[in-house]
Amino acid sequence: MTVDSAVNGGHTPDGTAARQARVLLDQERRTRIAQLAVLEQEEADETALARRDTLQEKLKEIDAALARLGDGTYGLCADCRKPIPAGRLEILPYARRCVGCQQRRR
Image (cartoon, rainbow, N blue to C red; front, side, top):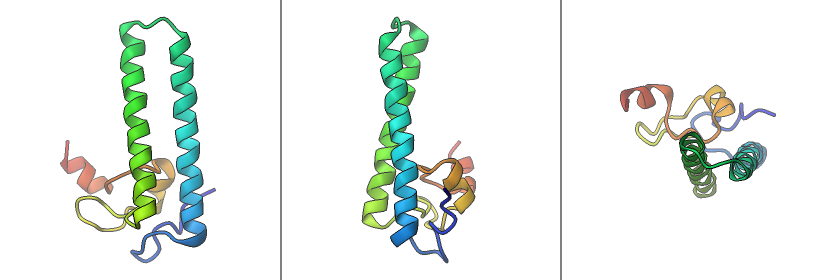
């Protein structure tokens, strides 16, 4: 499954593209929740705690992407407001920024 049409001509996704983006985000969310469940079974050392914090942060990012999908801003860079390339959204469906804007934030 791809999100090639998630950002079509600078428009936010609708119809099939929105459903595809939602499926990808839901898959990411389920994966992170499963990873958290595995971590809870392990001994809580410093590494496990750091990994748990990272997974929880990713869940927040995924939830924010789902909210953007709902409000019509999914697929637009939070900084420059230009469309995020579909390839980036395929790799990182919860991406909030285009590559250029993300690199400038570092």
